[in-house]
Length: 250
Image 1: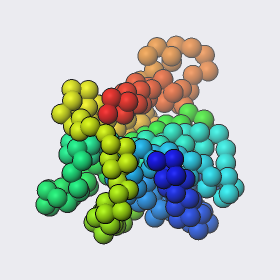
Image 2 (image 1 turned 90 degrees about the horizontal axis):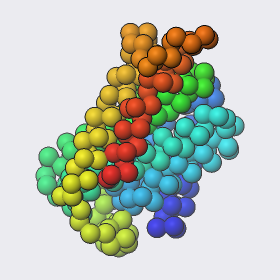
Image 3 (image 1 turned 180 degrees about the vertical axis):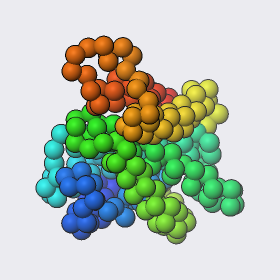
Image 4 (image 1 turned 120 degrees about the horizontal axis):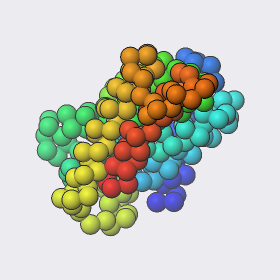
């Protein structure tokens, strides 16, 4: 698994760097077809893909000249992005091969991709807004759309093409980790619900706060100097925390 972390990180860097010139928001994000790879690798290699995505994104920021305060949230967001596909699939289908259940499996994979894209958009969008780097409504939504389109277009066909080959090589996460099937566990069910609800709620709340439709400040507005980003700073953490707790339970 340690070797696979390095492999996943190297693959991610390799597909991110060529597109660093296709900037959408300077210093923060660019066109990312490579966003499909953490999802693909998550289904294949499990937790190794999560660490690989986190470190791979950080290395790409360094090599691409985009390293900054927002890279911390990029590290966390990409870790969750690479963790959720494996964790949600394990919670629902255990060690089953994607596609073994027919077309329904691929709809499930697509749904998991939506939640993964929402989660990374919520974490990085919140962090960037909190730091005053970009509004959530801009960066958060761009990240969601970027990752969603890349993953739906590339991850699903690549997963269908590669899973059996990787499985035959004995490199699927459960073949290496020898984990028990815990898909029916109570904590996994709670984590499953939390991750889905928190991801969707975080995107909805982030947009509402960022666009000025919702001022969730828990009393912070009564203090001098509290402005736009403070609403994001105190209004979003409950949703982000719920997302983290859900991932931990999975």
